[in-house]
Length: 67
Image (tube, rainbow, N blue to C red; front, side):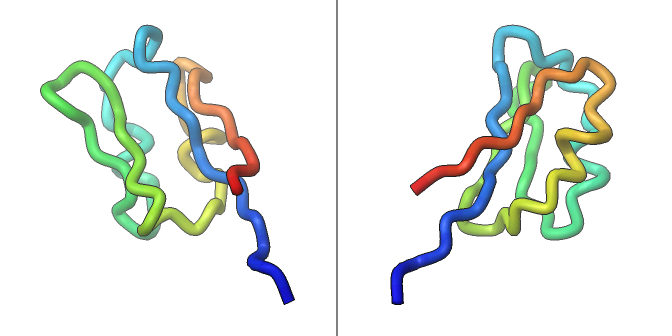
C-alpha cells in the first residue's frame, strides 16, 4: 500500500502580509511568521486541514497535493 498524498499549504511569500492569522488558527502549530515578513509551513507538523488557507485575510495561501 502506497503513502497517501496530502494537501499542504503553499504561501506566496511576496504577497504575505505577515499578519499571523494562519499561525494562530493552525491546530498543529505548523506555521510560523519569519522575521515579520512571511509565513513558513513545517510540512512535518502540518496535517493538511486547510484552516490557514481558509482564514488568510490576504488569500495568498493555497493548498496543493505534494508527493
